[in-house]
Length: 405
Image (cartoon, rainbow, N blue to C red):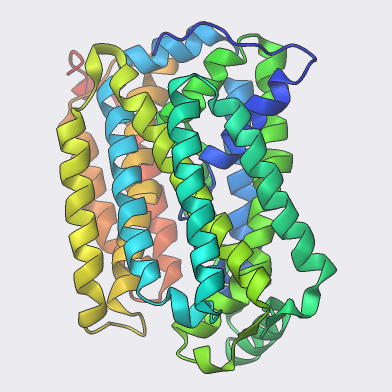
């Protein structure tokens, strides 16, 4: 990933790369998970998600002080960065196939509006394919962010275009869930996941290498997440009522302006396309080639097949089978990838020698049942000891150190 520094001057380069960051980070997590947290914990859950996410991602531009530091990190951790992109792409494939299994109930709009949103997505697929080949991903990111910003503005200008709205849903959830402060138990895992996962994201490194000075890196990442990405998860908040109502089985109560429904659907599909495209574009450019594209397509295919199967399966602990698999993917970003960053990046930055990998897998194995209890059994307090187990990877004694794998 040895890209030459890009245009980061006052003419708009920083803004464009900030948009690239914000849009590449607007995943099937940012476009969906806040709704689940609002349902489970009310506004507290949304804030516990949003604040560590915005701050943790922005900090990468401050921690990595130069382009050279990013290049060095990518060179030393190519395999992990490659697999981060592969799992991310597979997660997106799973999510979009699962989402489409109930999208028409969530967005009950006439077919012509559905076709219109689909036409926008097809056009965006063509444009992004050509634009990324020409090295215009940052310009595309800025265009996409403006598109999403227009949808966000419309959601405020026409607040009655969606019913039931998020405020009504949250009020109902808070009445039914007096223990909504349970979201506090999610703080450690949110800090780990959103604070550490950015260092394995190939698109973040691509942007950091284009924002090649200390000041441009700091400003670009701060704008990208503090303004651009933040605005898009506010948009998720605005349409969260649709997701919550549909998952709760009350889709018959949804009334939405067709144009607003088409705009939300177009936003979701275009953000999905952009994130997948930019990750696919970075994979072949990793030093040594990284994991193969065959691995990427194979894992993505399995994820898509799983998404076709889950609607036919029974749920557990009040969750549908589809949501359970979604939460299992989330576990990779709260458990597995933070474990690697602590064990193989944080320790090395502190001057420690890399210890045997079985230590990391042992700690992941110990923490996994705790994360299962927290994410899938409805007992979030278990996420605290699970996070402590993972955090301990940064503190392993030197006695077990050996040469790097």
